[in-house]
Picture (spheres, rainbow, N blue to C red):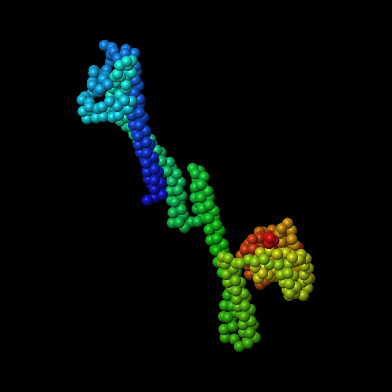
Length: 437
């Protein structure tokens, strides 16, 4: 059973049960009230007529009415002998002073009430009243309540059906649109805006954001595949052409050795590319990497002290001691390695590299800066993209995964990374991490 139909069924069942409970409760309460009213009317009528007899000292007026409002009245002597009156039928019931009892007469139910009429100097006489315990009024009232409850239940069910159908209409539309997207395979399509229900509108927005994320992932995957193919094509092309040249019929050993040297160099580059790709892929596919408090001040000091800076490149460090963050020591050193390698690769002869670490407003600020070739504003926008290298930097200096790797590691540590660069003046990369409590 569909969700909407199930809600309609359950709500309709609840409404029907509530209507039935209301009808039964009203009928029971109405019957009780009706019986009490009949009994009270019987007592009031007998009491008032008995007062007239008492005032006349037992003399019953000629115009005494023995049937008042459906109440049959009859007078009995103290020994229970019927003196005169009106009865609905043959009644054999002893006098029961002051009590209301029920008796069946000719198949009908009646209430009986006996009232003692006091007389001065004489034995009391009794005025008996009998009234039919008629349920006609109760039946009418109960029927009216039942009809009203049924009408109310019908109206509630109809409103329930209409409201549920209106509520599930956006869901059906969302489902149709999702199926359309699934069948077409076009993840650029989005769910239409929903205004009828705020929760469903939020759900549609969440789904559209999911599609945005999926589209971005697919685009990144496509770009990743294209970039990998582009990076691998160059060394493979060189290896193929040099291999063909070396296999030609030539007796020039020097030329063959030169071709083999090119092949070896391009093979090493190809291996470096594949190693970098495998390492990067393994890292980004890891779900959880345990983080522990790490003294990055000591790690930064030791790493920069041991780094083999090439001749002509000087390094200045400004490292504040005792800074501890939640991190993985090996991955933190990988951040330093990638940033310093980039600073050295794209630095200038006789240039300088500055590595600084300080604590600022509860955050650890790591800065690696150089005074090298720098990047343009457009290059800065794409600096963290996979395989991106600025045109001025395109050579055999790298694959273009270094800063992307740094960004992924910093994200894992719960921080973020920023880059600032001026073409021809240098580049500064800033890593911001939260200090451990």
